[in-house]
Length: 206
Image (cartoon, rainbow, N blue to C red; front, side):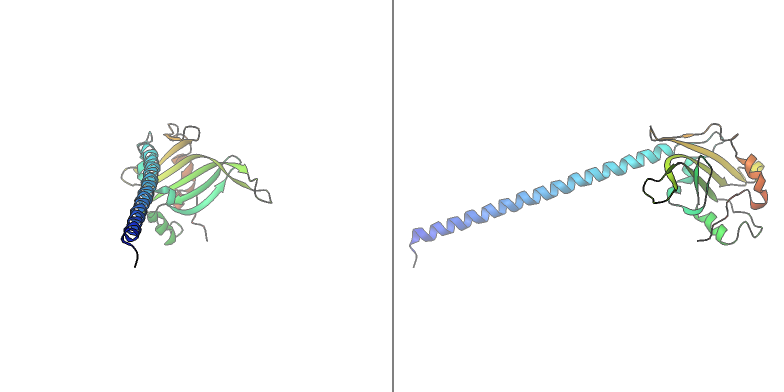
């Protein structure tokens, strides 16, 4: 048998080891909790910043009274078509109601798009790709969102469609409603495709 003082000494050491391990676990747990809290705070700040930017953007109204907030979520709308000029690359997207109308045959079947249809033309300044092994233009700086919404009661004089342009300034990361939009190819241009319910772009095969 071990002497009593040896037994007490071993017991004290075991107790000290338990206390040390408990302290280490506490510190480790506290550190992990602190890291999670900091990460969560950073994530919340990023989300709130994005929401603030969208709030600023969606508070805009065109001179003709079209609210950018009507098109909330357009960033994730379905692709309709694309186009380009020498100065601009364009991607056209539409909301679900208009996409469904496209898929049902509008406007090729002679029917008009229903009220609530919305379409957005997103426009970028192009640049030459430095990665591709062939000559190709890719989007560079985003320039503007040209929007159209169908509301026969609000816009009876323009075939039921309202038009607006919201310009984007990359330097300040801000949007502004274009005050010249009413004179810059709104309904005046789209009357050329009146028989297609004023819409230039068909829903492209994919």
